[in-house]
Image (cartoon, rainbow, N blue to C red; front, side):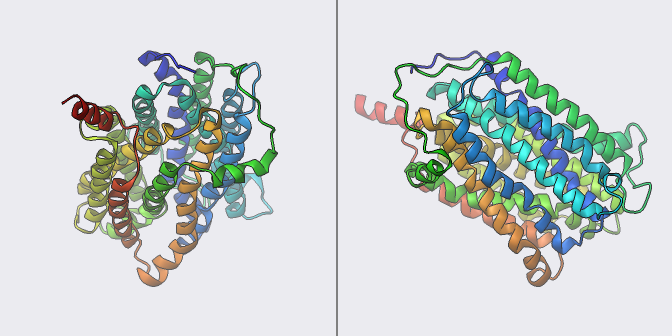
Length: 441
């Protein structure tokens, strides 16, 4: 079907749920390592706990995508899924910092890991259908804008989530140190409660303000082979999707290292400058900075991509991220890491937008949900590999120095910056304009 163009405000309302979803993820990314360490986790084993996110994403997103392609009810096709996921994710945000009180006869570490897994599954249930909805609703010429608006809102949500504990301490005087051994700092607890409320509100906003296109009555209905049809779809994925998968692998391997090891890396490197609690709060600020940069860069990406093409834009952005990670070894003042995070933020903004803008043009409309879910495989697989290998690399290759995990992240982004140049993006508007100009000469 020919999709009508959407107004900017309607695109904004449709994507608004990403603000709350990413706020929840930012709270998790910035604080879960800190929480698990207070519950008794060993720094060399942190990556194993973080496997919960990619494992649940790898399983949940393709399944949710497959069935949301075949769902239609009072709320439409995608909305029932991301609303349900938001409700469950909000509940887990309330429970996570209270793990010690939930099971006095079990290890808080195990309870925390279990809540983390359920939280990740719930966020994945919300995220994939909402991303597929953007592909459902927008015509090809608005795809880059749509995913850029999505990136902007992700950036805003992530900034709020990452900086909340710091703000609650610096502006409102809340303690950033646990009141009891094995507990969670009061500022982190309250931040998780606020995040749960915002996550639920923002997703409800998208549900209420967005209508979906009903199924095409003239479209031939295929026989549903159930879960196993996902494997057939995986084998038939478009060439562009496979090529983007390589780029995604190196990009998300790098990001996983940052989320897992940034807190211990900053704590160790600036041990004489920052206390452990201040280092944890400063990591939250740094994560807010890179997400703020991503939010700003989101609106520059369509302009730049229009002139030099989507692949070149993404390559330059990943190179900026590589330089940002590499600079962690150069700067000796924690305040200088702000410069590092500007580079990482440019890469992050592009990672959230450009691969999806390139991808949607290569996907069949009736398989949008399942392929968006399967594309998540190229996000979760590198995180699983990092989760399995990261602790060993830190312990034996880096000799316990987490900072080297961030340096290796820079190398990974550099490889991704090269690989993106070989991706087939025949639907790139900039490329099409150049071809038309040559034809008209």
